[in-house]
Length: 355
Image (cartoon, rainbow, N blue to C red; front, side, top):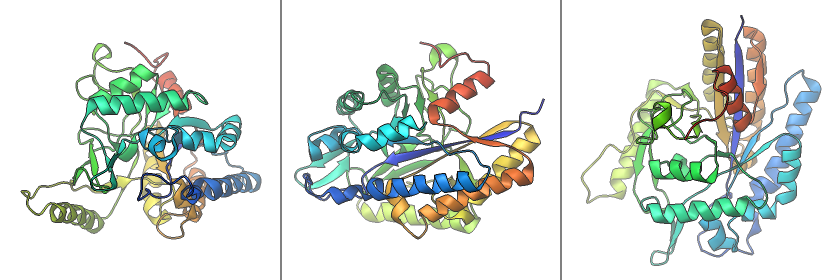
């Protein structure tokens, strides 16, 4: 039996183009240009590609912001949903999935700046509950990716309680701690996580567990692409130096772990994306297996022309198609929930499970 196939899940973290400096920007609508101009341009490219080549149409998973920062800015937790509702309904009608991308931004009134509020479960739960309730007036999202890839046992438990079935936040093997309580903060820990899909343990969200001790949500970690040793070392030094310079009175720490991989980003320069694509097709051929690419982008990247751009997106799609022909292995685009259902069927799990 030939099980060789590549399944590609493309998510979009539907953020604003930049974080506002003040806590009220009602008149400043152009911080959403990535949605207004970037997304329609992307859909035109999709239509052109599928009309000129015998390729599958890329249905995407749009992960929309609905959280406390949106409420503080616009008096509407689900502002990006309600303000662009016609677009999301049209995309959903065409087969795209509408998921959720909650951030835990909070406003520091003393320093007059936004910061990730990541260390208080009560605040996080209130943010998630209100955000999900607001987006659910329009869509009932079953997929999620958290802001900055931050996750915790508490957040996973809350997502399950709210009805989310699939999470795409995992960064396999990565751990990063950068300067808490500043706009440049990053905090995530996925060090023991691999690229394999799994149901998170109730005691440690980063790993799987037995059915009685795991949560009813499927983690689908992002896919990795190999990077050269010199590039990996440069990233390691840059992030750690930046962290320790930002905290000159603290004891120096390793805030960013060294690794010879990075996340596959569909809008990133093809030279960086191609390595991951080749690896996935080779793995499928050697293992006679279904392999997955989990990738994502941001709307504002569709407006760029450098390391991240819409032209890179197009080139990477064409490269997937070309490599499919070279290896003789078919590929499909699925939304996050479709991919989860497909995976559970292939692994003989009848549904996203248990209590």
